[in-house]
Length: 212
Image (cartoon, rainbow, N blue to C red):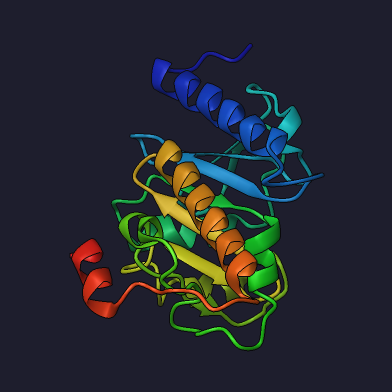
């Protein structure tokens, strides 16, 4: 077992635990999705490529630097550029989670969504936790184009929906990022359940109270 700081060990343990929780509850499947957490020395622990959230090993997680150089562990996820786009744009972000969760991915495929904010005001918690969810154009998964586009949004948006792909969200901690992406997925689920019916939306004044 490799020698590492207590901070790194806790980060690895926390990532594996939270990833398995997401997998066990159906937020991701197979080898889909990826997540990372940045340490105080600005190195990054990330899920390896083609790994399953339900079966990660703390000792084989990928370790990279802020330039994307592979330092140790298994080969990192191909979505590293997307993660780095958040970290390099906003110093408050210390973790990134990307899922192919069912309802948010379905939302990313719709034609009639508001590209500036994909989710309507059906729940206050979406606005309290995230604020808004802009939709980015479709790019091939793992492409640098995703990262380049995120650079334009990450300074003011912690959450982004990738068209025909799924959500990605950053947080000050890994727990915050995980909890917030769960809130996003639940809000998307509520939207699809309500979509066939007439439903009440929060007013702009009510939304403003939540995000200020």
